[in-house]
Structures are given as C-alpha cells and as structure tokens.
Image (tube, rainbow, N blue to C red):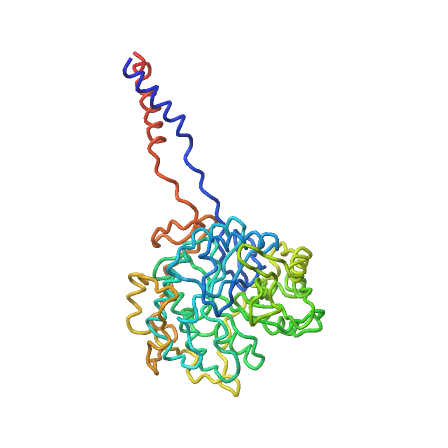
Length: 459
C-alpha cells in the first residue's frame, strides 16, 4: 500500500507539472553566398530603416530601452520591414528583450560597432586605430554575436567622406580584418562584416574595390554605401542608379544601400520598386535601408515618424514608404545573383585615391590584441571613456593578412547561434535552451519502474 501511495503521488505530480516550456522560435541566420545574402536557404533582401532615436549626437542606445523598443517594433511591423540599422549601442547593457521583440517580429539588426567615443578618427586615423579601440569593437561583437537576428556588423560609417581623406582607408580595412579575425578566433557564428561608405563620386568605385581586394583574410564580406542621388519623382532611368548597377555588375560580394531616401522633393520612395526588381537591381544589390525612422533635430525632413515618449505620430513619409514596400515585395527565386565573380583589383594611386601602401599591405594589428583573440574582449567599456587618443601617431605596417585568423567561425543555421567553440550565451533571440526539470525526469523513472516490476507496485 505504501508503494502504491508513492506511485500515485508521483503520477499526480507528473500530471500537474505538465510538459517542459516550449522553445521560442528564432529567425534563420543570414550568411553570404556569392554576391548575395541568404537566410534559411532563400535569397535575403534587406528591406529596412535606419534607427537611432535621439540622433547620433545623443550617443544613446535605443535597443537597450525596452519601452522604446516595444513602441517602435509595433511600427516596424506595420511598415513591413525585415531589418533595422542601429548606429550606436552600449556594449555593457543587456539587449535580450529588444532583440527578442525584433526576432518575434521577423526583424534583423545591422549594427555599427563604433560610437563617437570609440571609432576611427578621420583626422588622426593612425592614432585612433589602437588596442583600446579594438577592445570596445570586440566587446560589441561579444554582446551581439549570440543573437540569431544579428545580420551584419559595420566596421565603419563614412570615415572617408571626400576625395581628400582616403588615407583613412587602410585603417578601416584593418579594423574590418580584425573583426573577422576575432569572430573566427572566438568560434562565433560567421556574421558578415563590411563597411558603410559615403557616396563620393570621385572614389566610390575605388573604395569598393579596395575593400574587396587582396588576400582572403583582408577582404570584406560585403560593401554598402549611403546613396541620396535618387530624388522623387525620378525613375531608374533618370538617375545614376542604372549606371551604378552596371559598374558593380562584376562585384563579387553583397552590395546594398546602408542609407537612401533623398528629401529634396515630396518623398514617394519610387526607388523601392527598382531596388527589388529582378530586371534592374537585384542581380547586383541586396536591398537597402531608408534614412531614417524618427525625425531628429538637425536632420529635419528625413524622419518617417515623430516620436515623443510613448507616443509616435506618422508623417506622410511613413505611409508613402509603407505603400512602396507593399507594391514591391521581395522577389521569389534567386534574383539573378552570381557566384562566379572574382575579387576586385586593388585601385592605383591617383588624384582622388591617395593610399600609399602596397596592394598587399595594411596596418598591423596593434600589440596586445591577440590576448583578446585568445581570451575574449573582457569587460565592455559601454558609452564611457574613449579611445581616439590612446594610440601612437604612426603604426607598423605589413602583409595585409598578417596575423589574421581565417578559420574557426561557424556558418549558423535556422534556430542556432554561435558555434561549437563559442561560449553559451543564453541570449533571448538565440533560442531558449530547454530547462532541466525534475518532474519530467521522475515521470520517466516511474514509467520505467512500472514496466520492469509490473504489479509489484500495487501489492
């Protein structure tokens, strides 16, 4: 009778416990194949907005603020986008809640790893490329590599913004190289790394070629640029977008617009239809990001909404973009992407391209950085301090891929994040690991004992 009572109690506990909590779904990770992005085996097109409430001057992290995130994710869903770009984050903050909200809404993050305190200074690129700077960059990678919906990392944004400061290019490319090395060394998922360029007509093609030339360990995973040359009511034929598509037709890595949306005239976003047209741009471009979600002081006319506290008011541009997206869905099929294009030839020095280094030469990774490859970046500095004065006025140079770590990352897949060598993250959007639960284990033991001993339990 005692045995029967124990068994009955255990069965009752099993029934009350119920099944283990279901694992929350996560988005398929994005990877590079030829000159395109893919997710879940399908061509992936970036359809999104640039997102930095408060503007760059505020130096604040919008995806560490759960209430702001909740407010805006609802609007992102209404707009019909799949990607946001964020320019500044606090790498010491927790982003699990917002990244999960974005994931639940089917939205990926394209993230700048720099901020005004930790970045390459175009006026002193050598001095600002240093160990302290890279520690902050790597800490940002640590914070976001665990999320399946981290689409890409930007190694810089418009560091070169005219034809007189191209000497910054080797430092941007070195940072790009170091980021991929860190991802490989830490065994993280192979998250694409690339640069967001200003659309400088004099050296647009040279910079794109430079980021995609040289040895494997020194080439970018993608290239993006900020293009405001299409102003409504322009058409594809009226603008230089047609010529740009031709110029980049043999480019071997993904290309997309990290900012677009001219504000000179009433915005109807005619560019959207061309950007996702298989006869026009998809063989070369993988979509783009409209600038920008919120109206900001100093950038009046670009915002899609006015935001104040928990309140968001649509501007006419929001409705116009929503309509443009609804009329131009992402193409089915592969969009004419290519896998047989070759890496670019490095550009030659000219009036508009003032880079003195040889084709196979870059600034060497700063002394001491290898310890981060081996042990991780350590404590994140957040949005305090700064690194731009922490280096020397000159740096050593050497072979472009010298010291680069080119293996160790994993490809990732649907519902996974990180790699076999990566440390467990527990990130919300990385998929929740099943909890170890005592009750289901006991239920299994009861069934096993009942099967072995049969009626002895009720004697």
